[in-house]
Image (tube, rainbow over all chains, first blue to last red; front, side, top):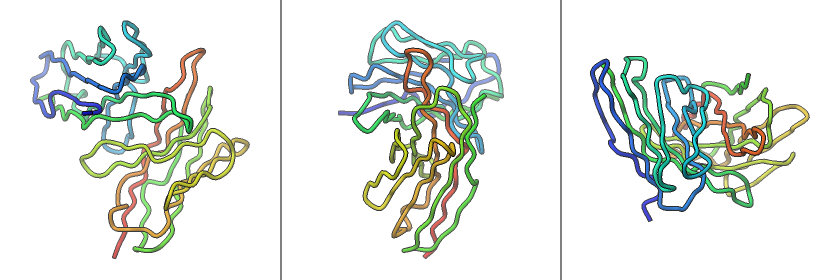
Length: 114
Length: 113
């Protein structure tokens, strides 16, 4: 049981390049999320999905696209990377427990855009 | 908009008790969660309060007062390994969609020997 995994762990891009971050979970969770974390800013929601084939915008969606073609995978795309997108990206998934909504986070992808 | 306020830093010594406060202004609020994050690591879930009152999980307790839009995380018998960032997060519902979290900016806890 791997939990939530993210690929790649590190990446350096040049301005204007594109890339896709992959998130996979093996816990059969319905909900999946993409966050970015910048120093002093906490975690901000980019996009999320409440089930296969559905996606929705979070707090900071501009410059990103997502797809959830399979329940276990959630992809985050950057079509034309900008230096402002330098950040640590975390994926999370969730099921609803008796004690509430516990999100399980992946290890993160550290992205630098030059 | 949604906002959560928590102190940026807290320091304490091993064995002590520390309280991290969180005040929130949100719409669609239905609970308050707490997450721990060590440097370079992923956030991990600590606790969740849907109702007013205290929830206890080992050395950690969390409290919620809906009428005051306020909660706190209480860490007892502090250990060096508790040095980390702690985030409060408001659980928000939007129509039929539950499970969105709005995070505070985090409190850096440093535990000294």
